[in-house]
Image (cartoon, rainbow, N blue to C red):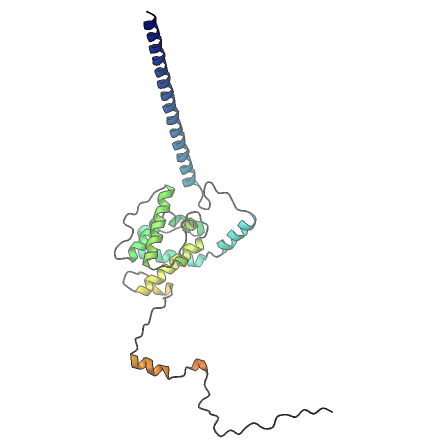
Length: 256
């Protein structure tokens, strides 16, 4: 009897522990679910704030002061409104009326290009095989930044050097729209220089880049060139020292 009683007591304790563990596990799962929902709701709220924020700053970035403000003012002064008009006209001619036209001013220019759709359309019209396969308008920040990055990668492969490329934040956060203008000018210049039939518009809008003028010389021409005195070394125009007399007596210095 005593052994049976102990066995029942032990069994009851085990069942109680199992029940407690089950309750703790259920409580933990419930708490984990609540935390996941909380994180999702915070991320959604942050995404909404970023998308609805003004074009000049991100949601977690306040205005700059002091030296930072002075640097930002100098960067903004580099923006050229006249160049903006030329670039808008070229992009409209190159891509067609489907891209529309922005409102006049820096903020309108930024809002027009911010989602990357117009930029991707532009690079696709300049290339035979369209480098950006899928162009989709989206209100999500990371989607817009992704399309701007696709344009930058395609522009670099097209021939724009890295020193002429803007950064994604320069356009998306409006940090340096003058750099955006510089990239588009470099892109137009390369398109005019290539002259492959894809450029549309007035070629005088962009300067034509210098091209390589390679020359091949034979071995005999290279050997003859070694006997020629380059003008960089100077020229005496055929004068020589023949017939010149020696120097006269040096000046005599007498002590009094």
